[in-house]
Structure formats: structure tokens, C-alpha cells
Image (cartoon, rainbow, N blue to C red; front, top):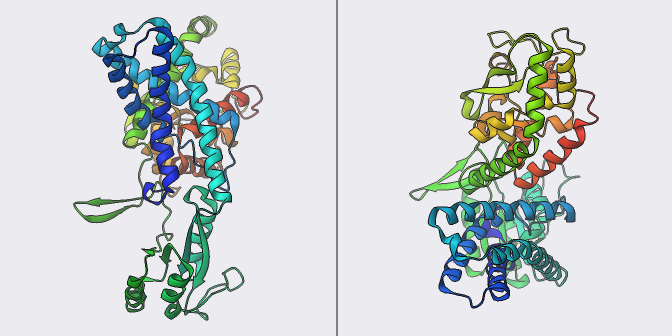
Length: 463
């Protein structure tokens, strides 16, 4: 959703509530532990405000659609994740500038622990306020000119995107006999000649024109009649002929351009993703370091060969990377032909069978995450030979390489884990990978991680 279309109350909440709470919490922490609030405190608070504004805005805490009910547990996990990212950035900044020496440990602890509580409380208050505005009918009213498939699609999207706080009141169209399926399309209030009068008398705020561009004279005439109203007018081009990924309008020195396919991880999103990856992989590696040493020793002692299996795979933008795993087979294939592991594969060692069943063989890929060649969540990397084979058979196969490959992914938690012995299975995996690109968020990453943990203990497709 473009920020320009947001309800003013939502825009204000997204940009000010969370960073303001972070600043206010620091103020309270200083007053409780080390008063008074000094100039250094204010400088640090302003930095926290600015960083918090960028980080929390990317998490869309106040966005609720008709298809996506608010979930308390997920919201709290996302809140803590965003707060850890903010703290990680501030920690790096503090050590770089030595500003952390100006604060007592007690002040930092109170601030770190108190802030999430205030954030959760303030977000609950804002959500209740926005819901109250909806119930009181303080929304924008719209009409759609063009009662065709595109017009209905637009109206349905407006209805589902509750944050827009827009209601479509009517449809207008002259083309009564041209509509493709009259059973699925709306009742028309009037023709194009009646639009301006309806808008003026009914207090319509927004007019969306979905007529084909070939009807240009009629559209120009309609726009001219709307000049005497105060309604905002939008032309909606029919761009749904394409299978878009991360659609975005932009401009180059005033010339509008449309992104047909783009990575979701650009700008601040890439920063959020990288910080999330470093924090999660770093914490996990610290916690499981002893287990990694034990597994490495067992691999070396139970079968001949190296501890780690290294294989060339495709990474971000199709660049080759070297992926690490604990060796689970008696062979280390990495040539022009790589045979996938199958059920009861004779190449799998007894220890390797356990490692593969529990996904413990994937743990060294946390090192790949720290090195920046992989992510915690993303499309699973395939052997180079498999890529070269399937890219010729599956439309859009290489799109999955617009983000870093992951240790786990949306496909893996939806049944497409393990051997892909048929083209249909690989197509299903690729479809889920592209869906991940279309819908990426830190919240989705967290959900996939939680589902992965659950699958480790009961997934029959791992072998």
C-alpha cells in the first residue's frame, strides 16, 4: 500500500507513535535512575527516535486487512524483533562514538526492558482508536468508473485493505453490453454523463477510472466534467496482464516507470533483513556451539571423508556461492550432474540419516548467513546443475534468485521439502518461492522460522 493513500490517522501513528514511545521511555528511564535529563540524553534519544522510526515503519504494526486478522502472539514477537534491531543499530553506533559511556547500566537496563511494554500498550491504544474511526464512519467515500473485471478487482482490494478506510459507494459505466460476466459484476448506478453530478451531490472523495486507455476521448471528457468537484481523480491502468512481483511505481526525473519484477529487499528492507539475519544466526551459533563441535567429531569418527560438505549453488542474482553442510553421505558431488538424495539412499551414512531427518546437517549454513551469502529465510539454494536443468523447464524459475537463498523457506514449511523427483514438485516449490517474494516481511520470516522448528520433529519428507 502506497503511503500516499493511507488515512491521515494511520500515517501519523505509523511514523510517530513507536519512535515517540522509544524517546519517552528513555526520558522516564533517566528520570528514574539518573536524573536530570541531559543534552547527551536528548541527543541519544533523537538518534533512537530516528532509527526507531525507520525500523518500526517497516514492520507495519497497524496494518490490518480483511484477510489478515490481528494476532497477539505474532505481534509481540514482531515487536521484540523490531526492538532488538533498533538496539543492535544503537549498540553499534554507541561503540563507534563511545556515547554509551555516558549512561549508567541501570538506565540502559530499565530502558531496554520498559520500552517493549510501553510499545505494546501504545500500539493497542492506536489500534482501538483506528477501529473506532471505522465504526463511526469517518472514512473516505469513493466511486469506480468502469464496471468491468478491473473495476471489481479494485473495489475488492479496497474493501480488504481496511487501513485505507475507503468505501466504494457506486459504479458507473456506459458499457452495459460489453461486460464479460454480468453475474459477477456490480449493479451500475449510472452512465458517465451522471458521474460529476453524483460526485458533487453525494460528497464523494475519490473517483477511480478503470476504463481502457482506448476510450481516451471519453475519459478526457469525464475528467473535464470532474474539474468542478473537489474529488480526487485516479486513473487505474490494467496491469494485471502480467505476473508481477513487488510491483512499484517510481519516477526517473519526472518520467513515471512501473516495476514489473523487483526484489522486496531494497532500501531499508534490506537493512532490516540483514540485521535480523545477523542477530538470529549469531544468537543460535552461540547457543549451539558445543553441539556443533560434537556433531563435527561424530561425522569425522563414523565415516571417512571431510566434516563439511561444500557445494556450489546459486545465490543472490544468480551468483555462485559455496554452501556448507555437515557431510551426511559417503560422496561429495558437485559436478555437472548431481543426484538428489532419495528415500533409503545407500549413499547416506547411518549418522547422516539422523542428521538429515532432524535437519542438523543444515546448521553450518548459519555460517553462510553470517558471511552474507545466505539468509535465515529464503528460497532454498539448489545445486548449480539442478538450476541449469529446471530454469529451462519452469517459467520464472530464476526469479527466486532476487533474494538470498535461505536455510528454510515458505516452500519447505508447506510440504515442498526434500527430494523433488518430479517436475510438478519443483514447480510447487518455485511457486511458493515466488509467493515469498511477493509477500515478504519480517513477520512472515518469523512465522516460517516457527513452523520450521515444529516441522523438524515430525516431517516425514526429510531423508
